[in-house]
Amino acid sequence: APMGVVADPQESLLYVAPLHPVRPQEPATVSAVQTYTRYDSALAALNQRPPYYDPFDDSPPSIIGKQPAREYEPSHPKTEPEYTRVPHRNKLESLQVLAQTRNMYIVGQTQDSLVLIDQHIAHERILYERLLSGRGGTIPVQHLVVPLTLDLGKREALIVSARLDELKRAGLEIESFGGESFVIRSMPAAIAQRTNSLAVVRSIIDEMVEATVSRKLLVPAEEVLITASCKMAVKAGDPLSLQEMRALIADLLLCDNPYTCPHGRPIIIELSNSDLDRKFGRI
Image 1 (spheres, rainbow, N blue to C red):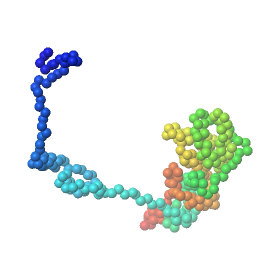
Image 2 (cartoon, rainbow, N blue to C red; image 1 turned 45 degrees about the vertical axis):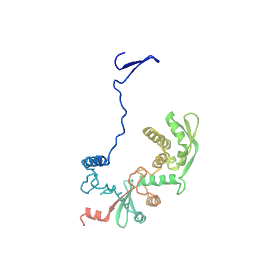
Image 3 (cartoon, helix red, strand yellow; image 1 turned 180 degrees about the horizontal axis):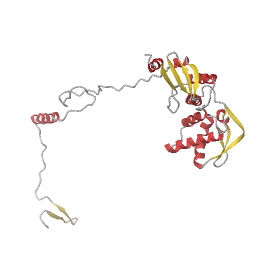
Image 4 (cartoon, helix red, strand yellow; image 1 turned 30 degrees about the vertical axis):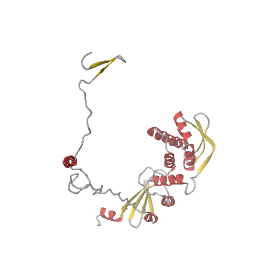
């Protein structure tokens, strides 16, 4: 056998044997002087590292190891912006309705300002909060003497079937009629009084389908109520009497949020007396 290779007679296998015998190493002993020397060297190397950068720290930069680390205290703490609802609710309670402009906006005034209110989204907010909380009674519903038939596609039928309870809560009583057909037993009076009531119902379903497809999830129950509220609300272009405008403002004041519609659009715009006088050069 070559040097370093030994044959095992018992197993007939070859294994590599060490050419030189190796003695087991004795455990190394480290003196206290060596320990402190190594510690000082490590600390010196640590002090040569670049300083820690804290973007919120206004104090002079420090080297790690020179002074103890501080707890994180940003010099510019984040503060939540303070939002002021203008005009405030107590101002709205004293709102005096003056007129309607373009059959879209209600013009009013308070002691401090001129106020414009979008009649459509104001009514949408009122209806939405009524449907959501049930406060103020249910919306007027008209039962149909002759139910309307609604033929839908497969996707539409699946979504409507999953949201029948929410539609009924919004005043639309829809029942399955077999397959992908449905019958409408009742609908909100605000929709039933229109000549294109069935088209309005279909537009609600279309928006439910669109929301489902865009999110790739079933349209949320809250979104069904928002869509129904929008379709039932007074439209831009509908003339309102002075009494109807006052009733609309009174109902708006009962809302938890009379300032924005469910989609986030502003309901009220205010022009203060000082801004108005400034525009006319009075101040």
